[in-house]
Length: 142
Image 1 (tube, rainbow, N blue to C red):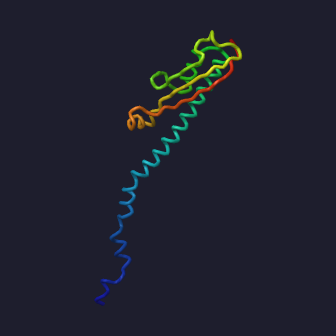
Image 2 (image 1 turned 45 degrees about the vertical axis):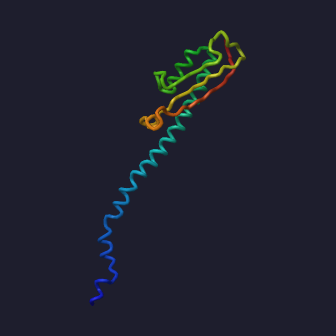
Image 3 (image 1 turned 90 degrees about the vertical axis):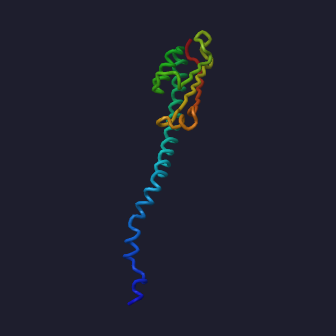
């Protein structure tokens, strides 16, 4: 009976390890949140890249059918949901409507600065990430 106190007793082991899983969860929770946030950030970056490509396509389509750069810029801003020009740079080649003739090629280039969800990329590297897209179409009108 003296050796009973040294015998294997699962009840005593469970009694002393009761908060271990809670502590492990509390330690791993910030890393889990960082992984989830990183995956969301990458997914949203791909989404924004797709939107910028669509905006370049629509801008080129508007210019090729109406020969109006102003309408194209308005449509691009509407698609990108921006009114300020600080995050976006739009270049149209050829620039003037007089230089565009039926059958000639018009090119729309968009450079968008993506600052990340809640500005995280801007905080990390000081500027954000540049997303570039361009689209070429033949003019259908003069």
